[in-house]
Image 1 (tube, rainbow, N blue to C red):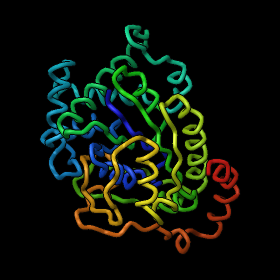
Image 2: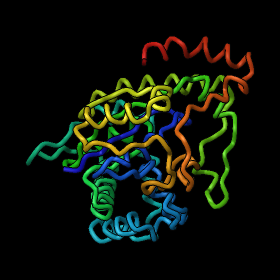
Image 3: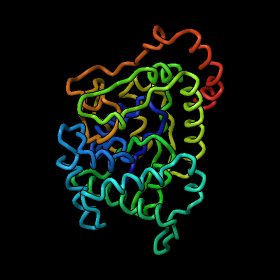
Image 4: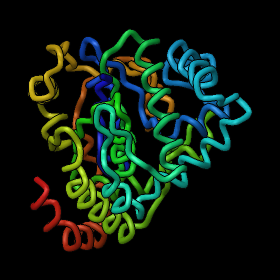
Length: 304
């Protein structure tokens, strides 16, 4: 059975960094936001390894296997991307949660579109793991529909790691655009005003906490704790998840794993110390800071 460590959290919360760090554990590979790989592959976007996704040493063989086993040609990738968008709507999380997980010899009658998406994504991840020589893949697709659908595959076990970042830092980050040459703007995080960002942060994190009970296990990590003591946090996570002892990760080496979609930082090639981004303390206007604190502090306190 394939182990999927699913990094959940709202946008700009450090999920790409945590995904790459978990991918440094022996036997694991970081794959980034798997939910977006179909569209990225159709557009010929680059993997974090530097190769276009269809020619990546991990994604290339995985896509070939899906084409062979599931009848998905390269020309069909756009239609699969549309299917992913339809199945992974956050508002459909309650419906996805009610769908039962199949047991040995007892298949579950799933809606056709959900069944097809689960089949394709499961085949893709199993093939990617084989190509990478890994028994565990790290998926940083963030939102509940991603892990709610993965858990429906009979050969996949999903463990959710919920990364929570101070909402003031998230709001400040969402105020800024982070375009990168060669990356389709539609695959980049959107820019949002403070009010909308704070409301989305609260709603998404509440939903993750609620629906993660359907996963095999659920753990919470604070971004501020992880960036302060990354090795200690990663060691605790690996022990709790039953994974191998992690390597020391005091530095973010960048470009680790094969992240098809995620924060542009996944393309970083030079080593940098893992530190907390505190730019919100000087950049976030006081009015926005007060607004975000009033709206999100109760939820932040409850989650952590």
